[in-house]
Image (cartoon, rainbow, N blue to C red; front, side):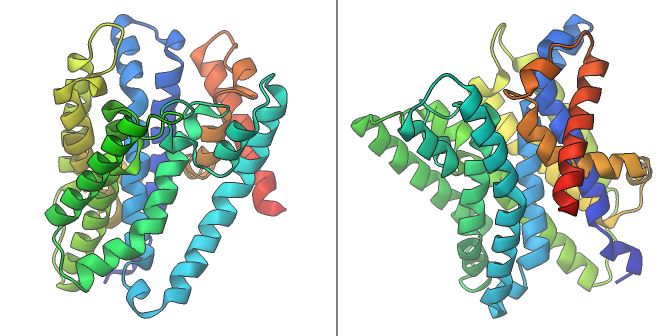
Length: 340
């Protein structure tokens, strides 16, 4: 394998910054400069899907082979992910709780235990954007099963997805009958905010890593995956913008849900695979040191851009100034967190 193809993580790290910016645009549409800009920004929730596809790809690439033979490697990886994700989340979440006037032990527990993402009622409590961390943690916990099922049992991608959707439907039926605190209570919630609705995005990322690994082991060349993925994802994004009803989002329509969950995710998976293994103009554009640092700061940015201190930072007079404020604060968090 060529030496440069081993350095696959830098372009994907930079892609995180773009995904974070899309989600930022979704939550702060007031900075739109035109009606088209406004509509594009409202569909920026697709950035979360980019994060999910990236998680599937990277976890498969890092641990997909070794997990069969050495469980300690996977446990070590999980400890590393916990150390990277939870401490900063804990600090920002506790700060948000203390600033908030609402004190509810049950909601505190849901947030601190990363369980709020299972409840339609409480998914946006405190750090509203952190519902996606519940989805991520579900994937980390289920990844050994997915790998075992695909490698040992030769279970197909379609069968795994059918199993995920079946479990999601069962949980929805149970939650809809029990109706306790919004847990799995609505189909729209289960399909859009839980792992059992979003599982395709993680699994297609895993498939991208497995496909690239097989092709490279046979000395094959990955032709134009970056271009194909970029075109597919941009077309899907444009279609979502056109499908979005007035005052709502495309993902809340049946066709929009399919385009977002499947078509856009496939495009992102192709793009991620291409960025990882191909040398293209896009990968060179993403090659600046500033882009790398922005990507590494994206998690801190993701936690900070809503609630505390996001409300103050977002009150600035222009989108550029607001974006710069968020970038500077999240960069400081990242810098001091890495050197501690």
